[in-house]
Structures are given as structure tokens and as C-alpha cells.
Length: 481
Image (cartoon, rainbow, N blue to C red; front, side, top):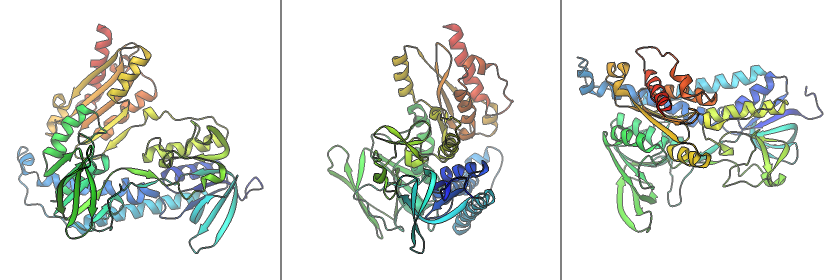
């Protein structure tokens, strides 16, 4: 029973990672919790994002490795022609999704969370409307409410989806078929990961980027080396500075490409399929936010550092938001951290998040990762604060483990303050970059200096020595300055 006169101590709208962690944490602290979900438990990450896509990347990565006869021959290995079954690769992803979703659901049930199936919305102060799957509509009361409704793929105007020949990542993770020639609109992490999957499985790819260079959100030094391997070195035709102004589904799919500046038609393409990977938008329009005078910014719900929802710049009592719908960092692990922090604040324990220390990764082969400031952001910060920015680069080609794996084409770029030695950011491209970045993220969160970090002993021979070398290079710059 709730300790109050409310139906629940806490209602969470949305059962993705943000909502899951919030509900679980609250229940473990003795709160009566209800969680509302209109689709599959686990949200985007479990069902249509990171979980199934990583399963596809794992399988297709094995195919790529076995099919690279030149690479294998350097080890003295000669493999037979590679065969794979698309359906079983897809089943691997679907089975993983099912297992993770079931485990997540059982975890909430064991914690005592009430799972409410239907569409949730605000119905006034400390009230939540629930339209159940069967159409019944009722209003529930709660001491506190957390909004965790996530995001959906963004589809630019002029692009028509049919879910079969023109689709988003939501459908792509099902791997229902392998187009001979597929165009991918967008060269961010989603576009890159699916280009990795499709090329490994024998598809030709055309990558279309509206900005003036492919991989525009990545560090330029990282882009230079990564694009050479992930795009130029594969069966990918990359086009930048052009807009997919019109995409019509069918057999073939017809694409009109226009110049970004003039909007004049420059090229027409006919391909077998199109994947729209142009980012994500918050899922907030059905939350009835205006009932509490909450104004969104392009759909994103404004929050303060404690995850309280803001109205006219002021925090609203008992209303919180976490995850993609807040627009802070659209990553599953960010959502999970926000969910826990929101509950901690509800419990009276003051907690905030240092977003700058949260790492991000792109799971291509090899991987890309980053944490903290970009070089431009670090430069602006150094000018603002009046210190000299330090930059060092550490290369995988000098690393014994990378050389042993014959995977030595990689780079780590470390940004730091030359006055205090504090780390500001890092960017990595290379073997297991997604794992390596965590060490830097932890150091950044603890505000450790490169002098301190340069004294830490790393295992030899491991890829972690790429990080160690960067720390020592940075420390030497401080000692000599």
C-alpha cells in the first residue's frame, strides 16, 4: 500500500531504460510504483535500438572478419568462402531482444512494480491519465510523476516511408531482407552502424549527408582516419552537401538529391531500399504538458539539474523527466542514470549528473568513442577561462596488442588543461574503442590530472596502453611548460 493518500507514490510514464531504472530504484527504496508503457517493455534501446543492432553488428562483424581473406592470410589462415543465413542472423537479434525484454519485465515485477499497459498522459497536478489497451480511460494519482517517453526516428519532409523499401532503424533491426543496393540518409552513428552491417552482408551502400562532410558530428581527426576505413575502404559511395529532398517508395525507390544551399535538383537515384538515419525526435506530444503550463523546446521537456520539469524556468513540484525526451544526451545509459538521480532527489538525497563525463560509442568495426568536450568546445572553454589547451595523440600502430591483432589503424586524441592537467575530453577510433573510453570517462568524472593518471600502471600488452601513452605525453607537456 502507498504510504500516502495517492494511488501510487510514483508513476513512471515510459518503460525504456530511463523509466526502468527509475521504477526499479524507487521500488527498492520502499515506494509503491506504477509504470505505464504503451508499446514493448524496454523502450527503444531494447526493442528497436542498441540491443538488436549490436546483435546484428556482432554477427555481421564475424562475417566481415571471415570474408577478409587478405587479413587472414597475414596470419597464415585460409578460410573457405563464407556462407551466412540472413534469417538466423535476424533470429539472433530477435531472440536477444526477447530475452532482455523478459528479464527487464521480471526484474520490475520482482521489485513489486505495477506494470500498467496503455497510453499515459498528465491529467493535472499529481494526476496521470491512462488509456488502457482495451480503450478504458481512467485517472490515477501519484505523489510524484516521472516522464520517460523517449524518442522516435526523425523523418525529414519529402521522405515517404512504407516500412519495407523506405524505412527507419525501427524496421532495419528486423533485417527482413538484404537489398542489393541501399541508400542510407545520414552519416551519424546510426547510419555508420547500419552501413557496417549492410556492407559486411554484401550490400552496396550509398551514404547521403546534408552537411558539408560525412560523419559531421565526430572529431575531424577521428573522422579522417575512420572514414578512410569505414567508408572509403568499403563498397560505399558517400555524397555530402546534398539533401534527399524527395524519396518515393517502390521497386525501385526513387531519390531526388538537391543542393543544400540552392535547393536545386542535382541528381536522381534509383535504389532497392532507403534507410532514413537522420536522428531522433522526442516523444512528448501526447503527454498533455500544457495542462501544467510546460512549454517544450522542439518537443524536448525542459529540466533542471535534479531532473525536475521546468515551467517558465521554475521547477514544478512532483514532476520529473528523464531520458531522450529531455534532450540532454540521447543515450540509453544517460537515461538510466537520470532515472536513478530523479528518484534519489524524490527521496531527498540531492544528486545531479555530470553529463560531460558520460561517454558515447559507435559500434562499427573498428569502433569510435568519445567523452567530454570536442576540440572546438575545448578551445572555446580555454579562451573563456584563460588557460592553454593541451592536445596529444596516441596511435594504435605503436601498440603491441593492436599489432598482434593486425588491427593497428587507430588513434586516440586527448584534450586537457595545460595549467592544471585536468582532462577535458577524449576521442578514440580503433579496436575496442568503446571499452577504452570508459577509463577516460572515469578520470574525467573524478577530475583527475594527467600527472596522476600517468603514474598508473597498465597491463602489457593490452590496448589500454594506448590510453597510458596519451596520459604520459600530456604529463610531459605539463612538466616542460
